[in-house]
Length: 241
Image (cartoon, rainbow, N blue to C red; front, top):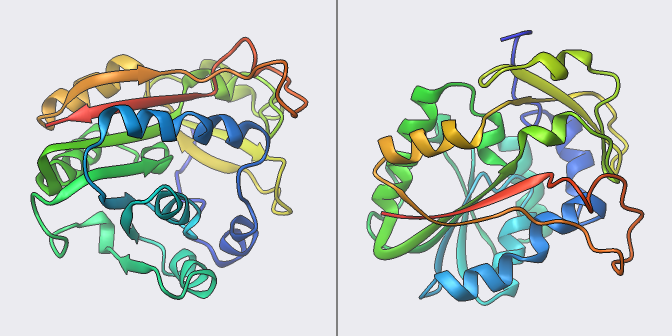
């Protein structure tokens, strides 16, 4: 890696700032197409929100009619989730372990940006293998993540211009962004991961790719897009056992 990595979200100050974030700007594109994708690929309502943070995506799933369990490694994030959503089911998973969750029952596992913060191939494979164990026979794992291109451009919700090392980063290297929609402007550390590398991880974990989407912004949408209409900041993988 180009610099020491730390999980930027396992932090009380970050959790306070992130708690106020819903779906602005570039984040809107991350979630815009998910209801249609779920409708096309998912049968059933039992869901796990893996890496739920402050509960934004868990609440999103419930509003779509799912019955989600939100899990995260950050106690600070989960405290915010429970405070905002007292009726929700939020669980702390130490080091991402999922042994306490029911095996073979999840119709949908959603992982929104979770794997941007997982630093090694071995750890990614282990986590995806554990998540596959939770899926029902016809269940689907939907992973939303950052494309390599997000670290090279300016966006409605992110800036990367202050991080020249992003330009030479290779798969597995640390990359950094500044989030523009929150008060906390400290750099966010992510791990660069390519499409080929993700497909290798999925195959090693016993998962197959059923669909891939790269959402782009549209001119008629009410946002001041910067790069979003021509470069996809996000990738959405639909995975099956």
